[in-house]
Length: 176
Image 1: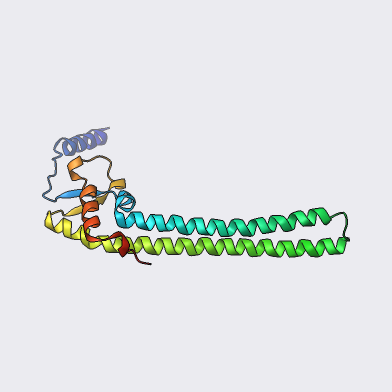
Image 2: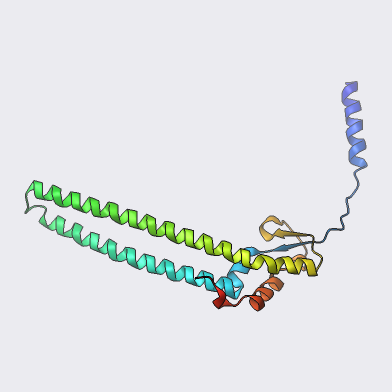
């Protein structure tokens, strides 16, 4: 019991003498998603992604409709043709479906790789702009908005960075 009392006294002593830490570091935060969506360069990237995605969807829909036609033809012939011929046509259909799925996976993988590469290049291009702003305004630490629970609106530099990106990078500078 005496041990618990002494432990409690020691803990109270530490907590009551807790001092507030002050820092001279200047901290700001930025919303990178907002920069991607609202900068001219980012908008052009996202627009190109939408165009590429629509193109892929159209291509896949055409192939899918062809497979549906083949499947419908097989269903119509099902009672007319022999079992061997039906099985041959079903094997051919399965092969075409497998090929379709492989093509779909390849298109998706290619799209995701291109998207990730171009987004990384976007962030590499805006990094010097952000670094320059931090140096000019003596900002020591820059945090992502997602990781900030609460902060002063004055500490959010997203709009200023978007303006600087729009002035520095033109939308047609986008890497093809």
